[in-house]
Every structure is written in C-alpha cells, then in structure tokens.
Image: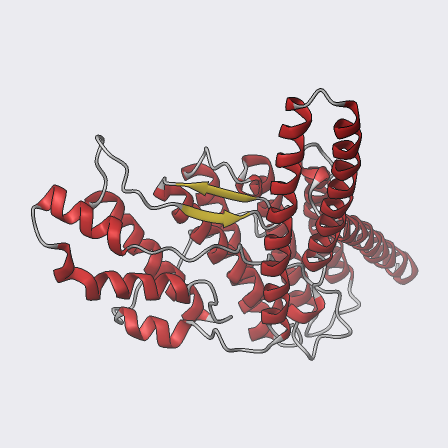
Length: 371
C-alpha cells in the first residue's frame, strides 16, 4: 500500500540559475493548462476587485445614518456579493477542469485530479535588498544588482514552470534561495520591507505579508501541485507510466505533508492543516489507484489466490478514497473544496468497493465449482 509518504522535492543537480530558467520555465506556452492558469489569474483579479468594493460598501454602511444611503449601499452589497459568488463558482469550475491535465491517450481511463498552481504578484527586490545590504553589511547594494536581478528572474520564471522535472527543479532552486535569504537578510529589529502576495487556489482570496515564510510555503504548494500535474499526465497504459504516476503523486503528498508540519500558521486557507490533510489523503488515494492499475495491467489470472489478491487491492483503494471523501465533507473543508472532487472520490470509493466484492465472489464461486 502507498501510505508511506515520500520525502519532498528533488535535489539541485548543480546547474546554474540561468539554466533553471531556460529548462524549467515556458511563459509563452499556449497549452490547455496555461490557458486555465491565465483564466485563474484573471478571476483572482476580479475577486480582489469585488472584495474591495464590498469592504468599501460595508464601511460606508457602518458610517452613515441616512436611510436612503443605507438602502442604496445594501443594494450595492447584494450586487457585489452576487458577483463574488459567481466568480467563486467559476474558480471552482477551473479546479474541476481535470481533462486538460490528463494524458491524451487516457480518454477511456477515469481521470486523476491535479492541483492548480497558486498565483502571485510580481515583486521588486531591488530597493529593499540594497537598503538592507547598506544598513546591515555597510556595503553598496548596487554592486549586487545583477544577483538581485537573477533572483527576480528566477521568481518570475516560477510563475510559469514547465510540467516536467525541470519545472520542479526550478521551484526547488528558488526555494533553496529563499532559505539562504531568510538566514542572511533577516533582522529582529526591522522588516525587510518586501510584501509577498499570493492568491488562495480554491477561493481566489489574496494574502499579503512581509514574512518570507508565506513565499516559501506557497512555492512548496506549487511544487506539490506540479507533481500532481506531472502524475496526471503520465501514460497509464504502460508500466513505466503508472510507475511515474505513483512516484509523483507520492512526492506530492510528501511535499504537502512537509508543508503541513513545517509551516503551521500560514494565513492562506488552501494551506491550512485541514485542507492540507485532505489533499494528502487525496494524493495517496490516487497513488493507490495507480498501484491497482499497475497490478492489473498485465491481466488478471482466473485463479483463487490471484482473484483474492485483486479483491484485497481493490479494497485498499476503496478504503483510502473513502478516507479522502470523509475529509472533504467535513467543515471547514467542504465549504471550499470543489463539488466535483468530493463526488469523484465518493464514486471511486463505491467503484472499488464493488470491484472488491466482484473479485472475492468470483474467486469463491470458481473455487466452489472446482471443488
């Protein structure tokens, strides 16, 4: 069984940052996945606009005592809330669009569910870093402008990672750089002055903090998401493809588990302990499903012990999908998880329960007939 969570990440292979940029990023790609990500970015901007309108209307409602103005504000609030609800439903639809992530040859196979990448805003490191270098190290920060530009280029590249190992290595490289920055550009007496903004992948709500931990956690989340996208694209008609799917889904669960244990106070809901726990179970369930498919790919012998083993494997898949479904229907996760996800988990749980009953009944009937 695939309950063992693999440790996160890939290690740097010694290639320079520019090579990471060249290998792991493709901002000009016009794929179905990139188009979905563009739609996600657009929805995030619309959501933040409506949230600002709602905040302004609520403040005006608290400040005014004029009944006519209050009625107008209440009408505006209802309109804004309706728009927000519509935008949230569109974002849920994007999270439910799993077809574009699947292998083109797997149209007859039940799809796997990937994670979408978190969106962020561009950040200018130049002035804060140069000020800190001058104040803390008493050196002219302009001497390090090329290095600062390289770091900004890597961060920009991380917004559009390619869906392969190079993309994962790009994110891992930037995460390593962030760990070094945290040790060398942090002071108990002052903030660095860089505001990181990341959008919740399920609600589109932005979170903005000066804390570099938000940046590190969000990069880890995207690394896990990229692993799921690589796994769902694997060719599940071959042993090698299924092996890749199992490995990447387990790695995704490992990254998510590391994120849950290490960054325990992230303000973004998609990285809350409850949501991460659900995502971990979901990825492990999908990995277990691929294990079952890998076992059955060569064919199933019509023998008692072979059928009995298949019943056990199917029961394992059903059990982990049932566990994943239970986490999806519990508050507060159920309020934001896509309905398609919970439905798919429930359907797969019933499907594999049925397969387990089928295999065990077939084995018992054949054994009785032969005896």
